[in-house]
Structure formats: C-alpha cells, structure tokens
View 1 (cartoon, rainbow, N blue to C red):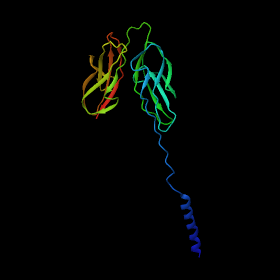
View 2: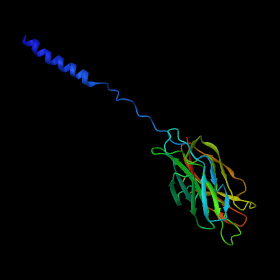
View 3: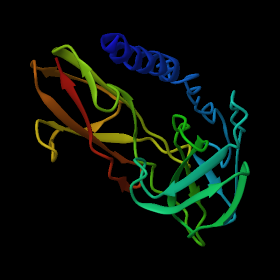
View 4: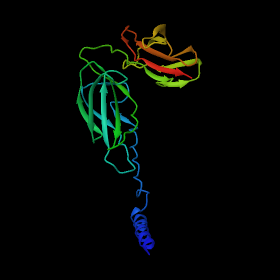
Length: 232
C-alpha cells in the first residue's frame, strides 16, 4: 500500500508536466520583411544635364512595397561619382526635394528607398553640372565604370576595362589617361586614349586597381575614382 501511495504523486507530476509543457513550436513564425523596390528612374536632373539654376528640384520615380510599409527615400548629392564627398544627404517620404547648390560644379546623385527594416539597392548614379557665370567651358564629368563591375571577381587572363566619359559641352572630344596596377594608387599605363576600352593582362588570385582621368578639348581634366576587381 505504501508503494502505491508513493507512485501516485509521481504519476500525477508526470501528467502535469505533459499537460503544461504544451507545444515547443513557438507559435507562428514571424513573416520576413520584404525590402521596397529600387528607384528605377531619376527624373530630374537628368543624366549629364547643365542646370541653369542652382536651386534644383530633384525628382525621382516612386518605389513600391509588397508589405504596404511606409516607404522612405534617402537622396544623396555629392561631388564625386562614388558619392563619398557628400554635400547633401536627405531622408524624405516625398519623391521630390528642392536643394540649392554651388554654381559651376559637377554633382552626382542617387536615391535609395527603404522601409522600417530593409533598404533597396541604390538607383543608378547620374551626373549633372550647375551653370557658372561667365563659364565658357565645363570640365568633363568623371568617367563611370562599365566593366569589370566594382569589386567583381573574374577569371585571370585578358581583361577588358570599359568605361564611359561624358561632358555637358557635347562638341568636346574626350581623351583618357588610364592608371592600372596592384596597389590602391595605380600607375599610368596609357595616356591620351581616344577610346573608352583597354585590354590588360591579369594573373590569378590578385586584386587590381584602376582609374580613368578624362580630358576635354580645352585640356580641362577630371580625376576619376579608383575602382578595383579581383581574379579567381
């Protein structure tokens, strides 16, 4: 009889544990957030535009969000194509923003859409110039990269460096100085290029750096950004 009395509390404890333990699935899993779509179109100022007024109404296309989250935008304006020398960086829920800039200056801009948790890929980066009083010739824009992509990985061998140059003075013929090497301060390998491609030979497991400076008919030069890529 005593043994039976001792066993009953143990059984009752086991039943209570099973009853109270419940499920270990933690309930419904949280729904992952989806970032908004990227801003696909920078409306104004358009690519390589010469802006007559230094007070500019920036405008871009709206992003969408499948979660119906509130979409914010981060407008960045800088004096270099890599957007590191930032002169304005503004969060807004609007798709327009009025900004006053300095005259006779090359600017570069893009927009990033984001919600409360995630952000989209950045829009393309466009260049424009603000007009200066008495300026008859404008410096060319810094060259933009085409290939290899920034920080890309590719097979060793012959690599085609490809870039684009532009100038608000549409009649100017542009030439290029190409810098290339294995250090972050690449050396000049070719000057006065009239084309915007150049073949280089690469070896495996190496990081390369390159830069393109752009010169117009009036010998006005824009210093390019340093880009990099690596070989497998």
